[in-house]
Length: 191
Image 1 (spheres, rainbow, N blue to C red):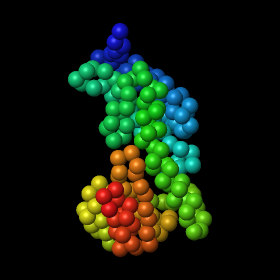
Image 2: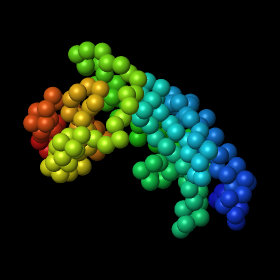
Image 3: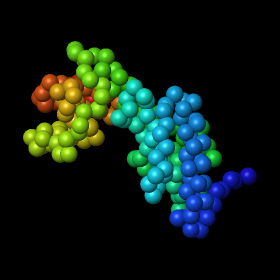
Image 4: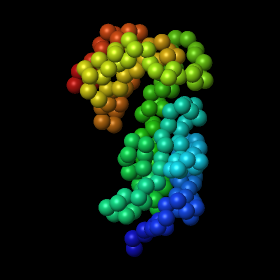
């Protein structure tokens, strides 16, 4: 038997939003069982469920519920556009959210333990625009290393890179861009 949830014809009705939030609440229960914290964001035009680790509250996943036009099935969808699971499988969606978040949260927590000095774990005010010189450096690094995500750590005062490698992503840091290039070269799967 195929289960289908058909949305009422008028998207702006409270029934539609209520149905979406009911299914996001079911997902919330499942992600909490997985050890994450869930924060409903139902005040906007498109309800979202924010999922994060309390130890890293400024990084997480925002999940929505969307209807796939081809199959007319409702899906839990990640903020990157990945269909996580059909609406009637919140446990599977929670497992896939865990798969997405674990490498990043692990990398952040590992980096914190390797820092030479303690830093304030509260989120500093993020500047509205990055320093132009840093933005150019980041663009150059990301152009040189396709798929590698680079950034300047405002709190750590170091350069960082997240290196994709299938299921084994790596994170490296360095005091300057030249050292970061060397760290990325050492960490890449194909050297």
